[in-house]
Image 1 (cartoon, rainbow, N blue to C red):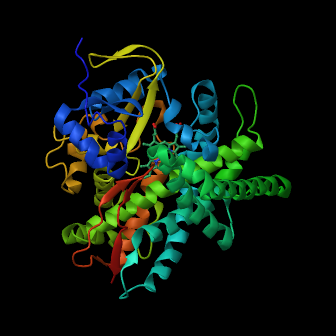
Image 2 (cartoon, rainbow, N blue to C red):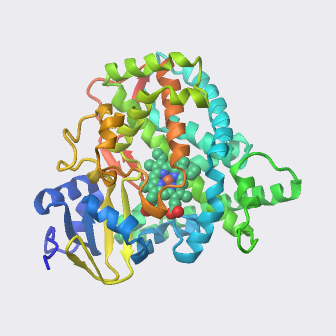
Image 3 (cartoon, rainbow, N blue to C red):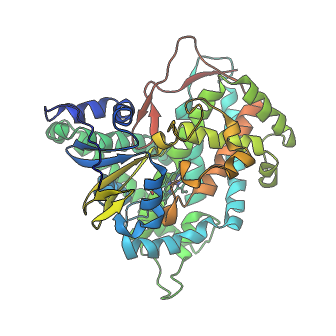
Length: 441
Ligand code: HEM
């Protein structure tokens, strides 16, 4: 049986992890350049790293029962509890069945109306920055997508709570990523206040969400939001419902999984479009079908804008990686994978794999013309994962991104400042190194 090539960095123990923490994308690219589409690497523990679509298919679909999320998501457990992103096995399956109806097509139609209203208000707010200094586009996109996520999840929430949540989520992400990538900083974090800050952020967040659930149960009202769907959903076989803790876990999971991903995808798109006047012109031509924001049916009349969104998610996949742990000894693509092995699937590298894409690092919406898509193997493009654990919010996110992008591009131009470079730095999602800063004109 062939042996998986090893990407050896240095015989000095901490050099690999430090280089990885400094620039994960460059580090992994070197591994692929030296070893091919699959290699193993030791970073505190051993990983098999891949950008081979056959590996993705094996792990996510064909033999998904031989894998669990395991260690890779443990770091998120304090925040996401036992929600869908974290859970495994029978518990996951039961929860998935309970949550899935929230994302049915008719439901999305209702949620789309809320998205449109919030986007229209957001456009008005963006006017204040027209012609002024460059703005932090990522912060603005986080603003609109967290407004959308909070409103579609919890109905109304006051501005002060919203701002608190927004700040805490960014802080918490930095904290969690630091713990995993730089474990040598743990002792320092215990005494410099970072651990305490995290605990108090979490306590505030929990009390806010539990308070929401309790008030909703007491109010007797049944508004049209995702929280209500979670409260009402029943297991078809047993009639069982979720308790407050499960509802908290699923609601926070949806918020966490759902808003920063879309925001980051939108920010990268605006960055890319600021250098693509022809693409902008074509989006604008399609935007003639609506005035301020597109309606549900109008989205279908804007296929090119949809292609642009899909190409953005190829070149800058917000969820840049997925990890699984093998629960049995097995063979993948001829390689022996033993029980307990962690498989690190780089979506970022899959989407830029030179063996699969012509011109992998160029922004080309033509990659998503119907004919081209039909002729491409499904597992070459996976911004939302695949198999039974495919993103539950995929349609929600695509609709949201197409809506917000079309509405913004119709009304505003975005201009880069000379010499400014963004750089890519993946945290849990694929962020930029220096922030995405653009002038609104
Ligand atoms: C552009 C936006 C988004 C991207 C790129 C994205 C990407 C992904 C990916 C790659 C996975 C699979 C992870 C894995 O298999 O390890 C996933 C799972 C998930 N996503 Fe998304 N997502 C997005 C938006 C959303 C939204 C809007 C929601 C909810 C409102 C959401 C909720 C979830 C949940 C709950 C899971 C776990 C599903 C399960 O394991 O059963 N995501 N997402």
